[in-house]
Length: 137
Image (cartoon, rainbow, N blue to C red; front, top):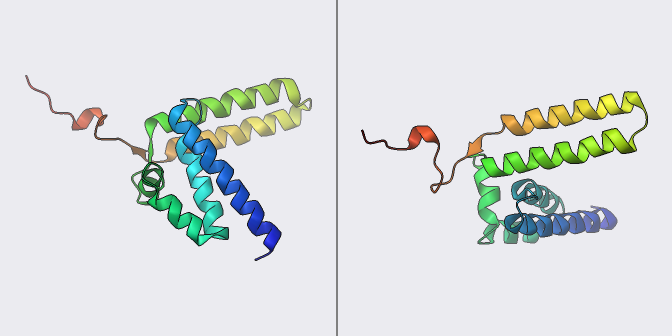
């Protein structure tokens, strides 16, 4: 692999990990997508960093839950969609002057939203889905 490409992927992965960690603390940043991006970058550039990421006590479960097919948390879906639309609306309305490009961006954001919503939702034990709760009458 090209050395420059490797460094760019490692840097991108590291920035994604940092943003993912911040996302654990701040509700505005979605954690799982950043950690998945980091995992992608690390698998292409540094298997040792990828292994460390998966073994990290606080970060590994996000990636493992997604990759095992459990999905991503509902909170992450909501946050990702809200951040996506707010930032996109700003760009569409105030930055991009061409109507054709605005329509194209709107379509891309719509497709990304559809994709996020189509991902399986992971429910933690503390917040099980309604149908799994036991009711007493």
